[in-house]
Length: 138
Image 1 (cartoon, rainbow, N blue to C red):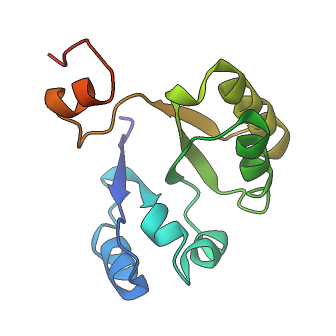
Image 2: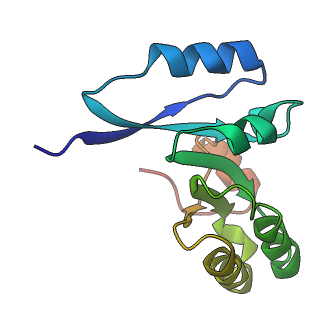
C-alpha cells in the first residue's frame, strides 16, 4: 500500500521551533514533506537550513508576484536548493509571469512544481469586493 503524502507547515522564524516540528512529525506511516513560508525562508537560518536539509520533499510558500523577469530571476536564485519540490506564485501576476516562472523552473530544477495561489485564505467576501472582485466565494 502506498503511503499517503502530507506536508507539515513549519511557519515559524524560530529555528528551534522548526527543528522541533520536524522531529515531532517524523513517521513511517506517511510520506512527509515540509512547507516553509516566507517568515522562515527569509529568516537568519531559513535558506541555509533548507539547503542542508536531507528531506527531499520541501515546499516553499513564497507566493511570488512581480514582473516576469523578476519572478524568473527569483527562481534562478534558488538553483542551489535542489531539494525543493514545490513553490507558490500568485496567479494575478499574469500569464507571462507564470510562463517565465515555469521556464525558469524547468532550467533550474526539473522536479520543481509551481503552484498557483488565486485567493489568500485570509480574504473574506467583503475584502475581495474591496479589492475589486465581484464574484463571491461559495
